[in-house]
Length: 560
Image (cartoon, rainbow, N blue to C red; front, side, top):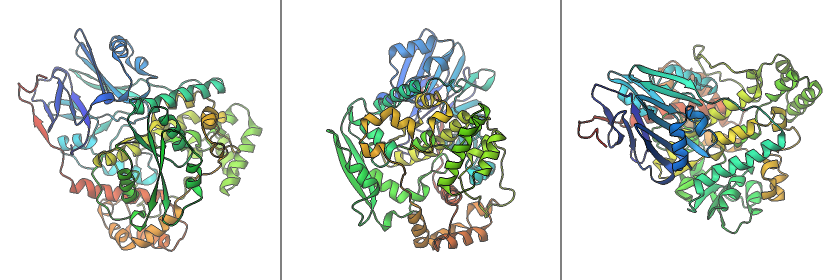
């Protein structure tokens, strides 16, 4: 693993062959083998032990000695840890059996692979790929380029498996298996969901800031402003608001100025030509293409302007402003007038016909509703650029869960980028307890075509300035994307004949044509274009970075 990266992993119990660990790893348990790499100080690692049993919680949590003792003895490990604030994985070793739980959203991923000496698991896919001797998986990339809905049980590397969010890896001497431990909660009264969300999001922020250490936040939209207000309860906060050069008022700047708190320091970050999208910048290698690959010049500069612990509002849109999948639930519950009204209002805001929405709603086609408004497909993808998709359940709760998990998976790579810059990046809206709270509201109560993010406002409106409570839109950066393509066009055209073309996943001539149109300001399927750019940059970064190295443990080193 690269310098500054934090990771953990282990192997099967009762191994008889040579045990291996990443270079620089610290062995915590010898049998079953469990190790850590990097700095796991403070709230990031909690350990417990009993008679012939051990447990560890890795990630951000508030687990204390009593919590660990209960989880260690619990017949159902998932039920014991569910509801804890934070984002974390759990490993428990009892009587020759190892359980490794991946969190319900996927913020703390767990990967595994088979080796000649048994199964090895880790929180970093690239490390396992180096151990297995495999590179990026073309089939995974095909799914990513199509619509970013990649299979939950696969990683971006060949022969490196991923434990799907909300499931656990079970290891014994005989082998490995994966089974679910989480399922969506049943909905209940709306005000109960509001109260539960307030508790869960407050806990998500507290677990990251409760020690009173100064933190920074993105101070922009309603999601990040809510986190800023909550973080300020526990210590000093620096709220950073980005703005184009020469612009001193309007948009997020005006909203940020309305927030006044005793421990809040507001700071602006001026965006110059150096921060335009697609600026040439060396990208560190990560476990999959980062969400911010096209913004790395800006993202890295913003991180440098903040503090070593930084909170973002990523995930808020997925939770509180989802695609209109609730229309299928309304039809299923006989609320046809409400379905027709919502479809009409949703379509009118986006200047499209409501007819396809209603057709999909009456067909209970949640997958089609989830894709509403995503944008045009990419004409530069080859006909064979396809991959098996996970099935989508026929309800809005499953669609919202899938959406948040996809966001968390992409954001995890941004967390790796931030770590390479010495910043601990956190996304509290990706916490499992927050997702649980949101899902306890019925799908049609979570959304509104006349109110902006009603569930979030109802939970935290009393803490926000009136201007934020009345907000109805959020800013977009489409103009800067066109400007960035125009300024970096030779650089972007150079990528068209790169790794993706060599893999047969794209048609370079069509991609070049799309870039020329984008440079001229034509309507562009940005989501698809950003995916192909991020994947190409990522493949280059992985190919240029030194592979993580592993070392064989000597008998002496196997004893912690």
